[in-house]
Image 1 (tube, one colour):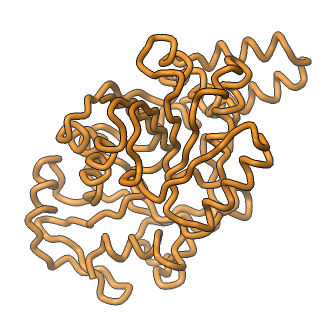
Image 2: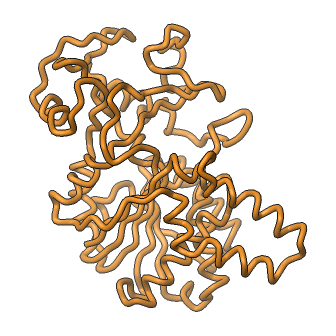
Length: 328
């Protein structure tokens, strides 16, 4: 079995890690920007309004989150759009791309509890089901969850049970490794197909995603497992791969040059790659916090300010995470 098939089963199989809802917090998954502060989604909501004001998006655009987990991120975007420009809830269309039916139900229930009949959500199992004129696509931590191949000094890994063997000659993997100057590490599988699907899903769109990684490839392996809030490299002897399979998250650092090339090959225009801190400040996070300060008591403002700081502080999520943006 290829390692990418093994990782695909680990994450997306019938009993895979992402096939059911995972709690966030002490007993569950690691914290993300979405679970840290509502102002993460709020800032993206403000950005969507700016795209409408500048004429890139229409008031009837589809706002689509890809891989929405519980639905918090999209709900925060909707809440802030309503606060800043309530009339847009009458014209914008909201949708989620989610492959698992059980998670679709979870998202549907949460968003109904949040907004009742005021907001209608359309679900798609994949981007291939979409065909819309104008859209804004958003995803949080999606590219690190694509299956990958493992490459080491000219050889690609295969799985023998739960044992990793580097003894396969794979021309495609070797070509990507050479292109991104890697003699070892992860080669993501599926970016090209994902970009091609998005290119067909909407005639005109902006796509924004947040993830951890760098433009250039890391010089070594970054693949790791999050197990009960402990980070273990995949090759760590302490990690029992058989026991962790499907029960813990497995991830790696994104090579954004690979993401960029995959989208540009379909004719989608790369706009920018920025640290999350810079991106959120540029999109108006501080303006939203200033509005909050004027409208709530000091105690509530300070609580929300501390949460928002985690999004932009360099030693928290601000520098480690990047925002990448494309347009067609």
